[in-house]
Image (cartoon, rainbow, N blue to C red; front, side, top):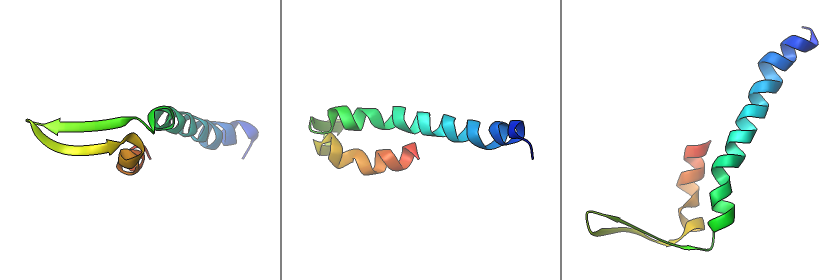
Length: 62
């Protein structure tokens, strides 16, 4: 395996996935302490801080 193959099939996808994960988790880092209220059809679905809702969001980002 030469360097070009390693770069093409390993390094590039790792770099892309790391970049996307950082982009998707940035809102949690910036707005983690902000209050968040989610209502669906006028029914309270979630009320808390952004960081409390982060676990499912981060699971989705992965």
